[in-house]
Amino acid sequence: MKILVEVSRWIVGLLFIFSGFVKLNDPIGFSFKLEEYFSPSVLDLEFLAPFALIIAILVVVFELVLGIMLLIGYLPKFTTWALLLMVIFFGFLTFYSAYYNKVTDCGCFGDAIPLTPWQSFYKDMILLVLILILFFNRKYLTHYFARASHRWIVFLSFMLCFIFAYYVLMHLPVLDFRAYKEGTNIAQAMTVPQGAPQAVYDYNWKFRVNGEEKVFTTQGSYPNVDGEFLEVETQLVQKGYEPPIHDFSIEKDGENHISSLLAEDKLLMVVAYSLRRSEAPGLQQLDAVVERARSNGYRVIGLSASGEELKEQINEKYNLDLDWYFSDETALKTIIRSNPGLVKLHKGTIVEKLHWSDAEKLQF
Image (cartoon, rainbow, N blue to C red):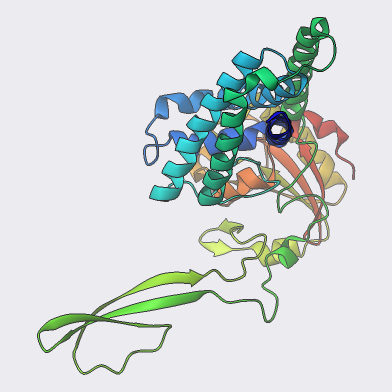
């Protein structure tokens, strides 16, 4: 039993530390995921949405430190209770998301390891078994290091986590696991390779044959049935190839300008997924950045999901001469974790991304 407890302890501890770290590296991304869970279509807890970022930071810091506490053997009773309650809670969330198909990516490991809700639920059930082993056999949880050092290790862990969280919030994630990381050519990342697997669907055709409704299933072709056609329903059997970037467009006046803009030799995109939620200090710095970019031969555009009226108001309020384009809010949130943020491209390749607080570091 001691060996089983020790194996469970290291698996659970390291998994909690890893899971906590990848989300702490991108707390804004995890807060977006929490906002999905808080939406009326999922848990209907909209009153929590304004506090999503604070909740995200507290949850991931606690998750990471809990893993450390388990490994060093600090407060085993509290630690095993906390682990058990946490995995039950997240197990419920992932089951709810999977069963009702509410949230397609649980965000358990951020963008580092995307999991479907069902995959995440199975992961939580395995964790639940391991944590139950620890919970009922906590007497075998020996401590590492001197007991007097435990509280200092935990205190230091908390402090380092909050310092790291502050750093990535005021700059950008240290590790970028998203499709829009520096070095990515957007046009190439949107291309479907020749011979890539195609999606496979079952077509359930409903006919009335001799006064009785019958369903005939094919994979596309119209069935040869002697009867009255009523309706057809499609069901995804096998998912086809999906390019890393598949939801990005740069629109204006109902036209998509992505091809011409990605062909620009020098392009600077000011990305603000929501101008209403943009940080004022960041908007105040844009005028100088735009002028500096243009003086170095860059074409500068704005990208936002906000309405045209608000874009004009922002231009006027912050003395901006920005040509704004529309793009999907989710795509813009994925491109850069800053509102506003700066993305520099050469012929469609992302060469630099900066948080607004680092605008002066933009190199031309």
